[in-house]
Image (cartoon, rainbow, N blue to C red):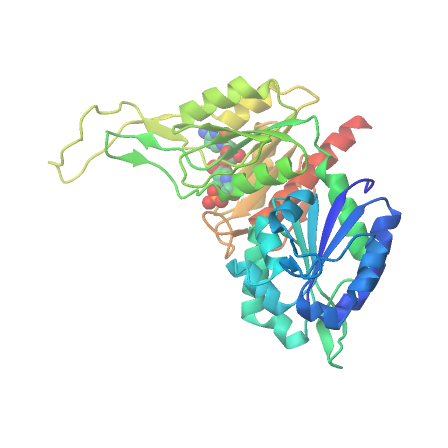
Length: 403
Ligand code: PMT
């Protein structure tokens, strides 16, 4: 899996840097190409000679090679890599990465890298727990970077707690799994709906909802990062996604979303419907702005097509269908009812009563419920992480139907 993969290791100035030579050995033995960049402070903890010998490549540290007079191109290194891992990552460099500061070679490479990024923080207990550090970890994760979380144990300071960099063997397994996962949906085409729908009342007003599209965009991103071709049907939102495996179909109304999803689904292997679709739309749309003249005003509404239900009716045995349920009461019962009535393989239940869950947040809290009624209760996590859990669940559905 790692044969020929190009891995760029960024090492910053923490005592855990002494573990990196072992990681390099493991990567090289598995056939990966490894290049190393270190910050000036990291040189105090691990020698460039050790790193260059094990990686088989000169270690980069500054913008210029003073001996040869050659300028080191941060852009080239950033483009070279299939994966950049910064480990150990100090609180200082993490804060700079979060802010986009580029005052050393490692940071300029980070800003130029187009590849996925992993980071493995290592620092003392109190620094790791500081709200600034937690915010910075969140920021990097929201950027789609993968956290190799610090573990608990004895720290170099003598304190005991969270802050130890993960062991090299575990980091190696994480990298291996990352490359396995990167390809696992390769050859699969997946329909994703995201965002709200807007139902016009007149040229000025509409019926809409609070969906930002964040959840659905996170799902599209996670699937594309794992090799799927994603057909993203996106309601009106300012957010978007750029990925060569994601095709975006912008829509405004529930009817447009229905028509687009119906046109796409037959050639897809699965659909994940996270959009918040209006259940009703005005019976007629006024061509002119409706003037106010009465105290009260009522509008005739008619039902919109239930997209998820229609997909459930047309799906083949090979196609997998995942719906969402957004509930304010009786969440589990309502979600189970939706699995049955809409012929779903899985439903993602999120409830507005959970703090940090649902509309607009960067986080969500969900239960995954399968059609046998088995419930996986997930904690509050970033929408990116939840999207990865949903991708895992979809993968399981594909695997199970092979048996
Ligand atoms: O976009 P964010 O700000 O990140 O917020 C995310 C979210 C809260 C919108 C998302 O997590 C979510 O819960 N999406 C589903 C919202 C919803 O409309 O739930 P529902 O229980 O009303 O609908 C059930 C399912 O039927 C959903 O999969 C929905 O897409 C689908 N549906 C609903 C109505 C309709 N006419 N057609 C449909 O396909």
